[in-house]
Image 1 (tube, helix red, strand yellow):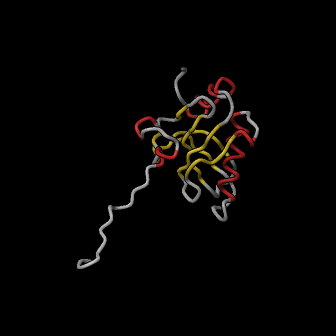
Image 2: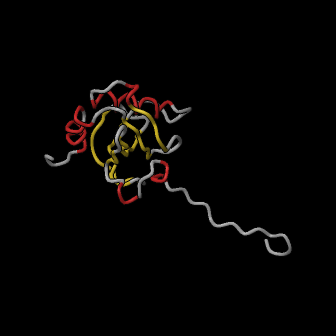
Length: 131
């Protein structure tokens, strides 16, 4: 629209890394701060059986694959993915929270537990070489 009173706006873009205060280049598996660690996951809803493991090059960089049997309806797959992730890492469900990606298969998840308790298991699930 042009003319008198026309407003021009810059295109809308969303940078998920801005939600966690880190540049996008840092989103390689996880971003850690003093009290929380952010990891990227890729949810595959409607799977035959739940499974956590594998790597997917997603919107937030390399992501851990979490397959769940729940359908992608009303957040059921997201909730199931958070439960499966917590179980796979040996954490309580309360230690795992969605940070970004409520309606997307690519999500950022905040983990509020010391990395020493779950980082080796995460590397194993992703298929990383020994760290």
